[in-house]
Image 1 (tube, rainbow, N blue to C red):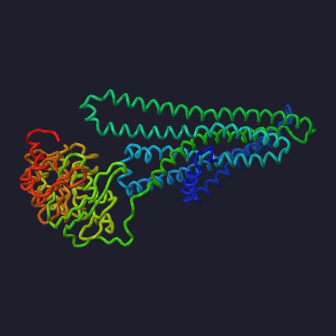
Image 2 (cartoon, helix red, strand yellow):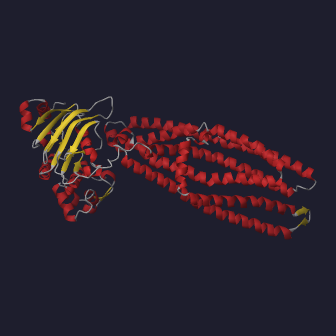
Image 3 (tube, rainbow, N blue to C red):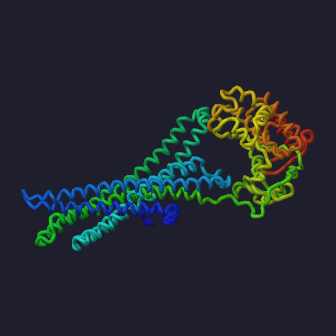
Length: 587
C-alpha cells in the first residue's frame, strides 16, 4: 500500500482523522456488505429462473414470476442501501476535510512570521483550498468504491467456492496478474502527482502575486512578461497533469485485459464442467458463475481507478499535513503573567537578531525608553527600523539579549497581553470585509457610536465616511475595496485612536496621506501621544521634529541619538539624511 498510495505516515494520519467517525464508517461498511450480498443474490435468482426454461414450450411461468419478484425486491433494496451509503460517505468525507482545514487554519494562526515570510502566500492558500478539495474528491471515491469493491471480491469468492472449487481456483490463480499490473503502474505515478500538486501551488502563488500587484505590472508595461511567465508555469502544470493522468490511466485498460482473460477462462472451464458433470452443474448455475466472474473482476477495474484518485488525494494530504505539522511559534512560558498597570517603560539590552544566519542585521542593540517618551527611529532603507518594531511586538524573538517591558523580560509576558499594550498603525493597511463601523471597532468591539464617531473625527476620517453611500454602515470589500490608500490609512489611525493603548507604534503611519491632512493628523497624534510611550518610524524627517529622542540607525546599530536640534547641530549622519530630503539627494 505504501508503494501504491505514497507515504505510509500520511495514510496513518488520514486514517486517524477518519477514525473520529468510526461509527459512520462502520455503518457504511454494513451498508456496503448488504449491497454486495443482495447484488450477489441476483445472479443465483437469474440462474434459477433460467433453469425453469426446460425447452421449447416448456417454460414454467408459475415458478419464474415469484423469482422475478424476488429479483425486483433485491434491486430495490440495493438501490436504497446505496443511496444511504452515499449519504454516509459524503458526511464522513466532508467532515474529515472540514477538520483538516480547521487544523490547517488553526496552525496558520500560530505559525511564526518567519514561516509566512518564507513561503508564497498563494501556495499556502492552494494547500488549504485546492489541495483540500482534491483530497475530498479522492477520499469520497475511495469510500464509495473501495469498500464496495473489496467486499465484492471477498463475498464473490465465497459464493464461487460454494458453486465449483476448481473453476474458482482458476480465477484466483490469474487474479495476482491484475494486481501486479496495477501496482507496477501506480507506484510510478505517485511522484508525478506530487509534481502536479507542487506546480499547481506555484501557479496559485503567481496568480495571487499578479492580481495583488496588477497596477505595478501595468505601470511598468510588464503584462507580456507576466503572461510569458504564467504560460511557462501553466505549460509545466499541463505536462505534469498529462503525464500523471496518462500513466495512471494505463492501469484500467491493463486490468480490464487481464479480467477479460479471467472471464474467458471461466467460460471455457464452466462449459467443460457442464458437459462433464452429467447434469450436476446446470446451465443456470453456469450463468450465475459467469455473472460472479464478471462481478469479481469488475472491482479490480474500479479499484485501479480509485488508486489513481487516492494517489492524488494522498499527495494533496501530504502537502496539507506539511502545513499542519509546520513548527509553530514558541508557546508562551508556562509561568507567563499578563502585564498590569502599564506605564510604558521599555528597555532593550544587548539585543541581536537576524532573519538569516549568514547576514547579521541587529547586533548588540541597547535602548532605554522612559514612560511617555516619544522615540523616533530613522535611517536608510534596510537598517533595521521595521525589524525593531517586529521585535517589540514579538512578531520575532531576539537571537540574543533581552527586551524588557515594565522591567519584565518580554518572553515572560503572554503575546496577547504584550500586544494589547501597543496600538499600531503600519504603512501597509489592512481592513477586513465588513462595514466601516466593524473595521473601526475591531480593537474595541464594545465601543459606543459616539466613541466611534469621535475617533473618526480625531483621525479626520469622519468627513469622507459621511459621504459614503451608507456612511458608517457602508460595506467595504477585501482590503478596503472602493477606498483610496490614504482613506484606508485614516481608518487604521482611527482604529488605534478608539482603543488608546498605553504605548503606540507608528510605522510610516501617514505615508499615503496628503500634506494638508497630514498636518492635521500630526496634531491629533500629538494629543494622542501625550503620556503614552510612542515609537515613530518615519522617512519624512520633517514629521518627527517634536520627538523627545531620535534614534538614528545604520546597519543594525544606533549611530546617533538625541533631539532634532541636537542632531542637526552635530552635523553628522542625521544632518546628512535631513538635508538630503530638501536637496533631492538619494541616500
